[in-house]
Image 1: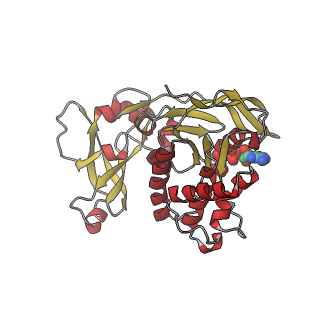
Image 2: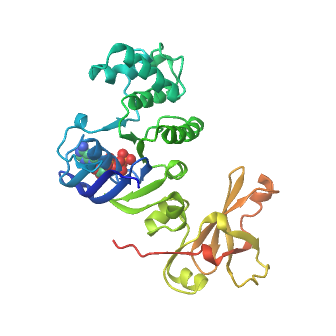
Image 3: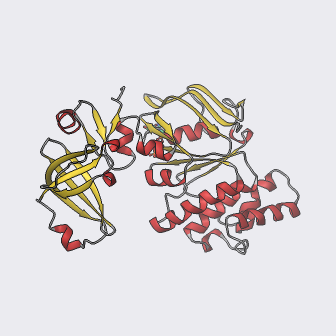
Amino acid sequence: MEGSAIRLQDLRKSFGETTAVAGVDLEIRDGEFFSMLGPSGSGKTTVLRLIAGFETPSGGRVELAGQEVTGLAPFERDVHTVFQDYALFPHMTVEQNVAYALKVRKVPKAERLVRARKALAEVRLDGYGRRRPAQLSGGQRQRVALARALVGRPRVLLLDEPLGALDLKLREQMQVELKALQREVGITFVLVTHDQEEALTMSDRIAVFHQGRIEQVGTPAEIYERPASAFVASFVGTSNLLTGESAQRVVGTAGTYSIRPEKIRVLKESAVADEPEHATATGTVAEVVYLGDATRLLVDLDAGGRLTALQQNLETSAEDVAAYRGTRVRLQWHRRHTVRVPDDVR
Ligand code: ATP
């Protein structure tokens, strides 16, 4: 049985009139890659800072490995935070940067060097020890920051948008590396991000934040396939909701429903929907977005409302795609992909 790395109980934080965190309960397990996902201002960074000890809660408690740490200073907690801006010392070499925390803890010099080199090897930076931060690329600097975090072997690594400053290609590469690194070292990683794709790619579990609260905690598949609220359905993935009159007419019952764009097939209007397990709706293509590998079609339904369908460009070219605009179509999807979204409680 895995233990609990972090436990938050009714955690709250206000800054004057602003409620940043409005009562968060959460348990993160030992060895998990856990992401806190949410839009700007939803409170995820504040929760991370409360775990690290950089902020004092207005209410509630923080436990690390079963011990209450709510009133303890950051250095008294077995966690390490990696920030987006790396915060490396410019006048020190890479090796000195990594070994610095050990020096502060009075680890003997020879051991410091061995451990710094091992940490640099873990982030695939062997041979870079003598350079200075200015002589490295953004991705390499981020790896130095990671090596510096790993060298002290904290129980928990807190990562605040660590890939935010990197360009898209490098970010995608680092996502894969970061996940592999976490598996290798077995340390609990807690990542703050507003990027849903990043959270879906890397995490064992995700907490979706909205207005200082958690709306849902689950595996990437649970969050994506079974969103617990309309907010989660629209924040994670493309918003594709049927509500009110259009839900009544297309689904047959009132409520809010989510259908993921990649589950919807676009057929000729005249196509006969004869399979009982298929749902279908006719409409007019309002917008076409060519994405290279796929095309996004925004369809205004005759029943009211709009659905987005994502089509792989198996045979179609950009020219074919442009001709879709204004045409009449029939959308079809398997009924099991019509997901009922609970009505928002707030
Ligand atoms: P982002 O992705 O933009 O960092 P976030 O989800 O991490 O957003 P927080 O940084 O936790 O959100 O902020 C939550 C709310 O608390 C915001 O309204 C923010 O303005 C406010 N806030 C955060 N820190 C402070 C502070 N030190 N003083 C005053 N208000 C703050």
